[in-house]
Length: 164
Image (tube, rainbow, N blue to C red; front, top):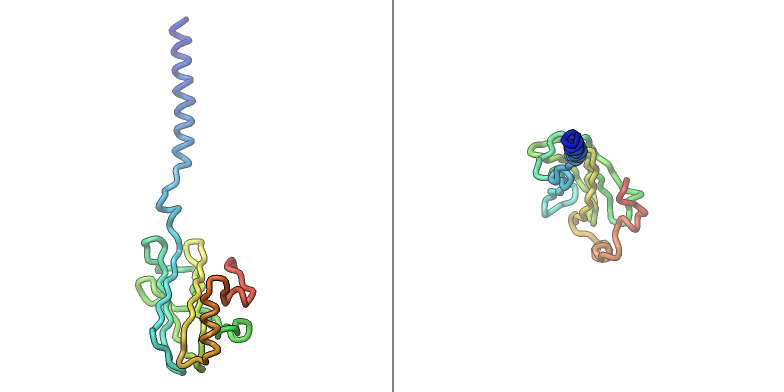
């Protein structure tokens, strides 16, 4: 009888430990998967002239993986301090190696913003980068300098939020 009780306790303990162990294994999360993020790196020519068609591009990656099948990639462009009045949204085409692009010509000298809206792998990212086209006015250059101050940004002025 004593041996039966000992065997019962040992088997019960093994059963409980194996149940806990399988429960823990079911909750193991691959750290690489959790740390992967959707990245969108803008590729813009260094010199931009008025009325010259250029290629605005974004390289899309998810962790170390090149994204060739993004759900949606669009480029939004607008002139500094005129997002509400001059914002344009253009669908991008897939080029190669995770690069999505649009053809764009700016019709006036000035400071503009380029913001790709990228949706892939269930995530959305939309970095913003200022660009200078031709010879902008001193006023626009001063506004750009003020916008680059960490306490003040173009998106704050426009009432935009990073979660749309």
